[in-house]
Amino acid sequence: QVAALVIGHDATIAIAGMNGNLDLNVMMPVIAHALLESIVVTAAAARVFARKCVVGIRANVERCRQYAELTGQLVTAIAPVVGYDRAAELFKKAVARGVPIRQVLEDEKVLPKEEIARLLDLPQLARGGRAGGPR
Image (cartoon, rainbow, N blue to C red; front, side, top):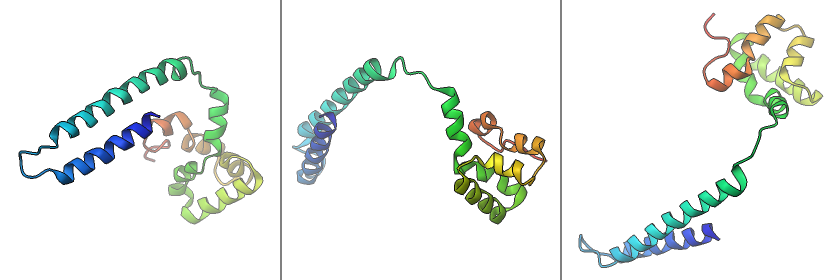
């Protein structure tokens, strides 16, 4: 409902903007009303959403870790070490087997376990930058 109202106000603002001329835009009150009402209604909806939905949400840390281990983004962490083509090949194997890239790296002994752990350090990757850092 809020989205429909804001979309309608956006259309109102667009039409009012097209019909106003020069600096003395007689449509300015309509534009201001539509914009301010959109802001007020969106802010109220965000507060209700936060209070009734967001507050109290707790992450399932183990499930989040599993999702992170299965993401294709981890390939970018190993590509500088094993090469793009090899990293893509390893990821395709992981997807085909339904296992994390980490397991394929370990099973095929592509890198030592310590190097894999260093490159695929999830908390470090989440903070940004290369987990393995400069060599």
